[in-house]
Image (cartoon, rainbow, N blue to C red; front, top):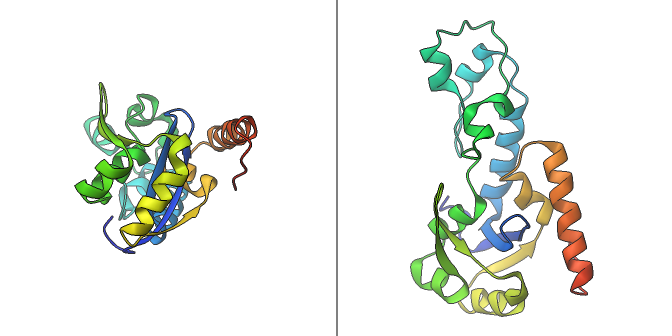
Length: 177
């Protein structure tokens, strides 16, 4: 996710209590791609899908099980989704995208027991983070829904995440998209 240079979109990931940043064009493409993967209905469609930013979960299992092209497929019924391994955490992508010096200036790399390293950025440090990113030449736009759509695919989860973001912002006297 190295394209789109210094135009970032960011949002709050409530279940991690962390801000996350992605290149804006890549975030839009990833969210669209995850929506398309969510809409796949047959094994044939899943096998044929070409992915740029993510993977189509469950394909290895389908191959092992000898699934027919006409069999039904649902990304949210795959072990990768159920186990929380897919889609990837946006905070991981933030850590991978930002140069190490920038990442360490705005957050703290954290090791997750199950999913590897990610960048933890305290939501209460938003003003400092935005000022710091500005000094590094980044332009940032907040869009919580877009960022959540890069990590969650079930509409109920996205809706719940947005409700949590809004509740947190009301508590802290701030507003977000």
